[in-house]
Image 1 (spheres, rainbow, N blue to C red):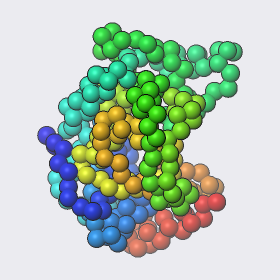
Image 2: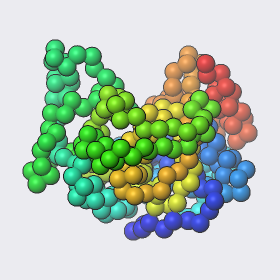
Image 3: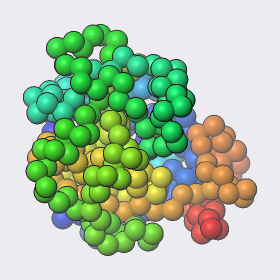
Image 4: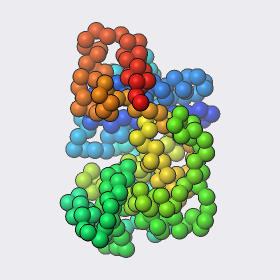
Length: 298
Protein backbone atom coordinates (compact mmCIF):
# COMPACT_ATOMS: atom_id res chain seq x y z
CA UNK A 1 0.00 0.00 0.00
CA UNK A 2 1.34 3.42 -0.98
CA UNK A 3 2.28 5.45 2.07
CA UNK A 4 3.18 9.12 2.20
CA UNK A 5 6.70 9.60 0.94
CA UNK A 6 7.53 13.23 0.23
CA UNK A 7 9.83 13.50 -2.79
CA UNK A 8 12.73 15.92 -2.59
CA UNK A 9 12.36 18.35 -5.48
CA UNK A 10 12.29 22.13 -5.65
CA UNK A 11 9.63 21.92 -8.37
CA UNK A 12 7.30 18.96 -8.35
CA UNK A 13 3.97 18.82 -10.12
CA UNK A 14 1.50 16.14 -11.17
CA UNK A 15 -1.32 15.06 -13.46
CA UNK A 16 -4.10 13.15 -11.71
CA UNK A 17 -6.75 11.75 -14.08
CA UNK A 18 -9.62 9.43 -13.21
CA UNK A 19 -9.84 6.17 -15.23
CA UNK A 20 -13.51 6.68 -16.05
CA UNK A 21 -13.11 7.26 -19.79
CA UNK A 22 -10.56 7.95 -22.49
CA UNK A 23 -8.35 11.03 -22.16
CA UNK A 24 -9.21 13.84 -24.59
CA UNK A 25 -7.44 16.90 -25.94
CA UNK A 26 -8.16 18.86 -22.76
CA UNK A 27 -6.37 16.22 -20.71
CA UNK A 28 -3.48 16.28 -23.18
CA UNK A 29 -3.16 20.04 -22.80
CA UNK A 30 -3.26 19.91 -18.98
CA UNK A 31 -0.81 17.02 -18.73
CA UNK A 32 1.59 18.62 -21.20
CA UNK A 33 1.35 21.98 -19.42
CA UNK A 34 2.44 20.30 -16.16
CA UNK A 35 5.06 18.14 -17.88
CA UNK A 36 6.66 21.04 -19.73
CA UNK A 37 6.63 23.27 -16.64
CA UNK A 38 8.47 20.58 -14.67
CA UNK A 39 11.04 20.14 -17.42
CA UNK A 40 11.60 23.89 -17.70
CA UNK A 41 12.24 24.12 -13.96
CA UNK A 42 14.47 21.02 -13.93
CA UNK A 43 11.85 19.50 -11.65
CA UNK A 44 9.77 16.36 -11.41
CA UNK A 45 6.45 15.34 -12.99
CA UNK A 46 4.24 12.73 -11.34
CA UNK A 47 1.25 10.76 -12.59
CA UNK A 48 -1.43 9.87 -10.04
CA UNK A 49 -4.55 7.78 -10.67
CA UNK A 50 -7.76 8.92 -8.96
CA UNK A 51 -9.61 5.60 -9.09
CA UNK A 52 -11.95 5.65 -6.09
CA UNK A 53 -15.11 5.94 -8.21
CA UNK A 54 -15.78 2.21 -8.21
CA UNK A 55 -18.96 2.59 -10.23
CA UNK A 56 -17.19 4.11 -13.24
CA UNK A 57 -13.44 3.38 -12.98
CA UNK A 58 -12.26 0.70 -15.40
CA UNK A 59 -8.86 -1.06 -15.66
CA UNK A 60 -8.85 -0.61 -19.43
CA UNK A 61 -9.15 3.15 -19.04
CA UNK A 62 -6.21 3.17 -16.63
CA UNK A 63 -4.14 1.25 -19.18
CA UNK A 64 -5.21 3.75 -21.84
CA UNK A 65 -4.00 6.64 -19.66
CA UNK A 66 -0.50 5.17 -19.51
CA UNK A 67 -0.45 4.37 -23.23
CA UNK A 68 -1.75 7.76 -24.37
CA UNK A 69 0.60 9.80 -22.17
CA UNK A 70 3.58 7.65 -23.18
CA UNK A 71 2.62 8.16 -26.82
CA UNK A 72 2.67 11.92 -26.23
CA UNK A 73 6.27 11.54 -25.06
CA UNK A 74 5.74 11.80 -21.32
CA UNK A 75 7.26 9.70 -18.54
CA UNK A 76 7.05 9.63 -14.74
CA UNK A 77 8.47 7.82 -11.69
CA UNK A 78 7.02 4.45 -10.79
CA UNK A 79 5.13 2.99 -9.04
CA UNK A 80 2.22 5.31 -9.75
CA UNK A 81 0.06 6.27 -6.78
CA UNK A 82 -3.49 4.98 -7.02
CA UNK A 83 -6.09 6.41 -4.65
CA UNK A 84 -7.73 3.03 -4.12
CA UNK A 85 -4.53 1.97 -2.33
CA UNK A 86 -4.61 4.94 0.07
CA UNK A 87 -8.00 4.63 1.74
CA UNK A 88 -6.47 4.28 5.20
CA UNK A 89 -4.52 7.52 4.69
CA UNK A 90 -7.71 9.40 3.88
CA UNK A 91 -9.49 7.79 6.82
CA UNK A 92 -6.74 9.07 9.12
CA UNK A 93 -7.13 12.61 7.74
CA UNK A 94 -10.90 12.44 8.13
CA UNK A 95 -10.48 11.30 11.73
CA UNK A 96 -8.19 14.26 12.43
CA UNK A 97 -10.84 16.63 11.11
CA UNK A 98 -13.50 14.90 13.17
CA UNK A 99 -11.42 15.34 16.32
CA UNK A 100 -11.32 19.06 15.52
CA UNK A 101 -15.10 19.06 15.55
CA UNK A 102 -15.49 20.26 11.96
CA UNK A 103 -17.30 17.28 10.41
CA UNK A 104 -20.83 15.95 10.56
CA UNK A 105 -22.76 13.07 8.98
CA UNK A 106 -25.28 13.84 6.25
CA UNK A 107 -28.09 11.55 5.11
CA UNK A 108 -29.47 13.91 2.46
CA UNK A 109 -29.93 12.60 -1.04
CA UNK A 110 -29.56 14.81 -4.11
CA UNK A 111 -33.35 14.93 -4.29
CA UNK A 112 -33.51 16.07 -0.65
CA UNK A 113 -31.07 18.88 -1.37
CA UNK A 114 -32.94 20.02 -4.46
CA UNK A 115 -36.20 20.02 -2.52
CA UNK A 116 -34.70 22.02 0.35
CA UNK A 117 -33.20 24.57 -2.01
CA UNK A 118 -36.45 24.98 -3.92
CA UNK A 119 -38.30 26.11 -0.79
CA UNK A 120 -39.44 29.76 -1.11
CA UNK A 121 -37.56 30.87 2.01
CA UNK A 122 -34.23 29.76 0.55
CA UNK A 123 -34.21 32.51 -2.07
CA UNK A 124 -31.66 32.38 -4.90
CA UNK A 125 -29.86 29.07 -5.37
CA UNK A 126 -26.06 29.41 -5.36
CA UNK A 127 -23.77 26.98 -7.18
CA UNK A 128 -20.51 25.72 -5.70
CA UNK A 129 -17.68 23.76 -7.36
CA UNK A 130 -19.72 20.65 -6.46
CA UNK A 131 -23.07 21.96 -7.65
CA UNK A 132 -25.75 23.58 -5.50
CA UNK A 133 -24.45 24.93 -2.17
CA UNK A 134 -25.65 22.57 0.56
CA UNK A 135 -28.39 24.22 2.68
CA UNK A 136 -27.14 22.72 5.97
CA UNK A 137 -30.06 20.37 6.64
CA UNK A 138 -27.94 17.91 8.66
CA UNK A 139 -25.58 20.47 10.16
CA UNK A 140 -25.36 19.98 13.90
CA UNK A 141 -25.57 16.19 13.83
CA UNK A 142 -22.91 14.52 15.94
CA UNK A 143 -20.40 12.15 14.36
CA UNK A 144 -21.52 9.55 16.91
CA UNK A 145 -24.77 9.39 14.95
CA UNK A 146 -23.00 8.53 11.70
CA UNK A 147 -24.53 5.58 9.90
CA UNK A 148 -23.13 3.41 7.12
CA UNK A 149 -25.19 5.26 4.53
CA UNK A 150 -24.13 8.77 5.55
CA UNK A 151 -21.81 11.12 3.75
CA UNK A 152 -19.39 13.20 5.85
CA UNK A 153 -19.44 16.97 5.35
CA UNK A 154 -17.16 19.76 6.48
CA UNK A 155 -18.84 22.20 8.86
CA UNK A 156 -17.51 25.32 7.19
CA UNK A 157 -18.49 27.75 9.95
CA UNK A 158 -16.75 25.68 12.62
CA UNK A 159 -13.69 25.24 10.42
CA UNK A 160 -13.43 28.96 9.77
CA UNK A 161 -13.86 29.68 13.49
CA UNK A 162 -10.76 27.59 14.22
CA UNK A 163 -8.70 30.03 12.18
CA UNK A 164 -9.32 32.60 14.93
CA UNK A 165 -8.90 35.48 12.52
CA UNK A 166 -5.82 34.04 10.81
CA UNK A 167 -5.61 35.16 7.18
CA UNK A 168 -4.95 32.33 4.73
CA UNK A 169 -3.20 33.21 1.49
CA UNK A 170 -1.65 31.35 -1.41
CA UNK A 171 0.23 32.14 -4.60
CA UNK A 172 -1.36 31.74 -8.02
CA UNK A 173 0.57 31.89 -11.31
CA UNK A 174 -2.25 31.13 -13.75
CA UNK A 175 -2.77 33.79 -16.43
CA UNK A 176 -6.19 34.90 -15.20
CA UNK A 177 -5.44 34.85 -11.48
CA UNK A 178 -1.74 35.62 -11.08
CA UNK A 179 -0.73 37.03 -7.72
CA UNK A 180 -1.45 36.47 -4.06
CA UNK A 181 -4.92 35.14 -3.32
CA UNK A 182 -6.62 35.28 0.08
CA UNK A 183 -9.36 33.22 1.63
CA UNK A 184 -12.65 35.14 1.88
CA UNK A 185 -14.86 33.54 4.57
CA UNK A 186 -18.07 35.25 3.51
CA UNK A 187 -17.58 34.30 -0.12
CA UNK A 188 -16.88 30.70 0.95
CA UNK A 189 -20.10 30.54 2.94
CA UNK A 190 -22.05 31.88 -0.01
CA UNK A 191 -20.31 30.08 -2.86
CA UNK A 192 -18.92 26.83 -1.41
CA UNK A 193 -20.66 25.83 1.80
CA UNK A 194 -20.35 22.49 3.62
CA UNK A 195 -18.61 20.29 1.05
CA UNK A 196 -18.59 16.49 1.15
CA UNK A 197 -15.34 15.03 2.45
CA UNK A 198 -16.26 11.35 2.16
CA UNK A 199 -18.94 10.01 -0.14
CA UNK A 200 -21.36 7.27 0.75
CA UNK A 201 -21.77 6.21 -2.88
CA UNK A 202 -18.08 5.36 -3.40
CA UNK A 203 -17.06 4.51 0.16
CA UNK A 204 -13.94 6.68 0.10
CA UNK A 205 -12.68 10.22 0.51
CA UNK A 206 -14.18 12.73 -1.91
CA UNK A 207 -12.04 14.88 -4.18
CA UNK A 208 -11.45 17.87 -1.88
CA UNK A 209 -9.96 15.77 0.92
CA UNK A 210 -8.06 13.22 -1.16
CA UNK A 211 -6.39 15.78 -3.40
CA UNK A 212 -4.88 17.85 -0.58
CA UNK A 213 -3.75 14.73 1.28
CA UNK A 214 -2.15 13.25 -1.84
CA UNK A 215 -0.45 16.47 -2.91
CA UNK A 216 1.08 16.83 0.55
CA UNK A 217 2.02 13.15 0.70
CA UNK A 218 3.90 13.35 -2.59
CA UNK A 219 5.54 16.68 -1.86
CA UNK A 220 3.84 18.49 -4.74
CA UNK A 221 5.09 22.08 -4.86
CA UNK A 222 3.09 23.31 -7.88
CA UNK A 223 -0.49 22.30 -8.64
CA UNK A 224 -1.25 22.78 -12.34
CA UNK A 225 -4.87 22.21 -13.33
CA UNK A 226 -7.83 23.65 -15.27
CA UNK A 227 -9.39 26.96 -14.32
CA UNK A 228 -12.68 25.18 -13.58
CA UNK A 229 -11.07 24.18 -10.28
CA UNK A 230 -9.99 27.69 -9.30
CA UNK A 231 -13.12 28.17 -7.18
CA UNK A 232 -12.30 24.99 -5.24
CA UNK A 233 -8.90 26.32 -4.17
CA UNK A 234 -10.15 28.16 -1.03
CA UNK A 235 -11.55 24.92 0.40
CA UNK A 236 -8.27 23.15 -0.36
CA UNK A 237 -6.32 25.93 1.32
CA UNK A 238 -8.60 25.69 4.36
CA UNK A 239 -8.16 21.91 4.61
CA UNK A 240 -4.39 22.34 4.39
CA UNK A 241 -4.53 24.73 7.34
CA UNK A 242 -6.72 22.39 9.39
CA UNK A 243 -4.50 19.37 8.67
CA UNK A 244 -1.22 21.33 8.97
CA UNK A 245 -0.19 20.50 5.40
CA UNK A 246 2.24 22.42 3.19
CA UNK A 247 0.82 24.97 0.75
CA UNK A 248 1.75 24.60 -2.93
CA UNK A 249 1.72 27.22 -5.65
CA UNK A 250 -1.35 26.93 -7.89
CA UNK A 251 -1.54 27.49 -11.63
CA UNK A 252 -5.01 27.35 -13.20
CA UNK A 253 -4.85 27.25 -16.98
CA UNK A 254 -7.67 27.97 -19.46
CA UNK A 255 -9.77 25.00 -20.56
CA UNK A 256 -9.69 23.44 -23.99
CA UNK A 257 -13.07 23.83 -25.66
CA UNK A 258 -14.56 22.62 -28.92
CA UNK A 259 -15.25 24.88 -31.87
CA UNK A 260 -18.64 25.78 -30.38
CA UNK A 261 -16.95 26.93 -27.16
CA UNK A 262 -18.15 23.94 -25.14
CA UNK A 263 -15.83 22.39 -22.59
CA UNK A 264 -14.57 18.97 -23.62
CA UNK A 265 -15.85 15.95 -21.67
CA UNK A 266 -14.81 12.29 -21.60
CA UNK A 267 -17.93 11.44 -23.56
CA UNK A 268 -16.51 13.55 -26.40
CA UNK A 269 -15.00 10.49 -28.09
CA UNK A 270 -14.24 12.44 -31.26
CA UNK A 271 -11.69 14.45 -29.23
CA UNK A 272 -10.15 11.43 -27.47
CA UNK A 273 -6.38 11.11 -27.78
CA UNK A 274 -6.95 7.48 -28.82
CA UNK A 275 -9.08 8.66 -31.77
CA UNK A 276 -6.22 10.74 -33.13
CA UNK A 277 -3.70 7.94 -32.55
CA UNK A 278 -5.84 5.46 -34.46
CA UNK A 279 -6.34 7.99 -37.26
CA UNK A 280 -2.57 8.18 -37.80
CA UNK A 281 -1.86 11.55 -36.23
CA UNK A 282 1.55 12.23 -34.71
CA UNK A 283 2.00 13.32 -31.09
CA UNK A 284 3.16 16.73 -32.31
CA UNK A 285 -0.04 17.18 -34.33
CA UNK A 286 -2.12 16.39 -31.25
CA UNK A 287 -0.07 18.86 -29.22
CA UNK A 288 -0.63 21.61 -31.78
CA UNK A 289 -4.36 20.87 -31.99
CA UNK A 290 -4.78 21.05 -28.22
CA UNK A 291 -2.81 24.28 -28.12
CA UNK A 292 -4.84 25.84 -30.95
CA UNK A 293 -8.17 24.92 -29.35
CA UNK A 294 -6.99 26.39 -26.05
CA UNK A 295 -5.76 29.53 -27.76
CA UNK A 296 -9.11 30.02 -29.48
CA UNK A 297 -10.95 30.12 -26.16
CA UNK A 298 -12.40 33.63 -25.62
